Amino acid sequence: MHLRCNSVGGGRVTPYHPVMPALLESSEQARPLTIEQVEIVTETNRRHDVETKRVEYALNGIPEYWIVDPENRCVTVLTLNGTTYTELGNFGSGDTLTSALLDGLKLNVKAMFDEAEAQA
Image (cartoon, rainbow, N blue to C red; front, side, top):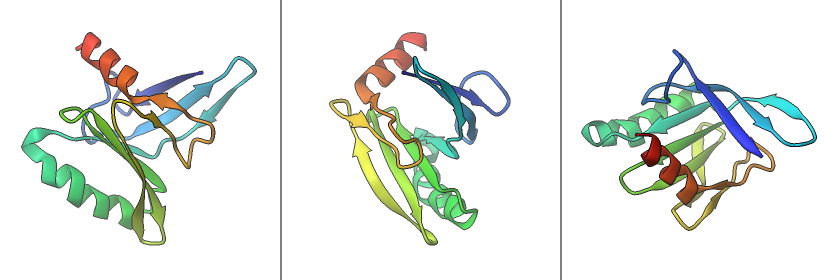
């Protein structure tokens, strides 16, 4: 199973670029899905990326978003519950990331960060 993401504006996923649409492919079929928002934490704007964006996305009704923290090699997955987010999980290098929105998604967090570093 592969996850391909296209950032708005093309190219690499960068801070403030929502990832949409994403295409989840399996050997049986390909189906379009949407990851509403992926936020890449930057050291120069950590507080804004983690705190302010959470409030903004909740106010805009984004059903799920991921906070990707390259420095700590972890991904926090948040799901909207009414007007606030509930943490689905904080996934580190030894974990397999799952999503409430992307049913069946299993992403090896260590492999994801290793691949990103290799491409940098």
